[in-house]
Amino acid sequence: MAAKESDLFDSLPDDLVISILSKLSSSAGCPSDFVNILMTCKRLNSLALHPLVLSEGSWKMFAIKAKNWS
Image 1 (cartoon, rainbow, N blue to C red):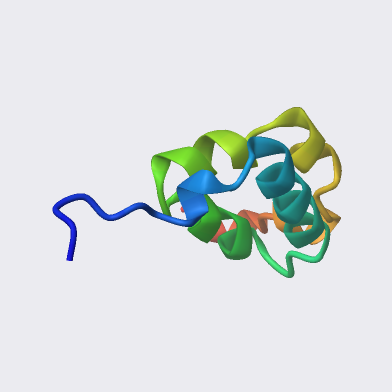
Image 2: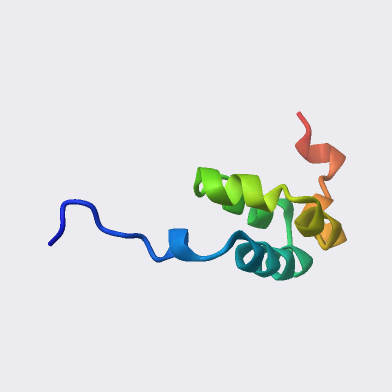
């Protein structure tokens, strides 16, 4: 095994990952679905906050009930 393995995810172009994240954000059922993506890695965090991904987000992705604020 090589000392430094290549990660197939890192070889994907940003445009493709943004497209995938846009589809995922449009089908998110709750805020935690999206937050879990943000916490996965630095690359997903930055790409998930891309304006295209956020503009495709479902209303459920941004829905936070007041009872959960405390």
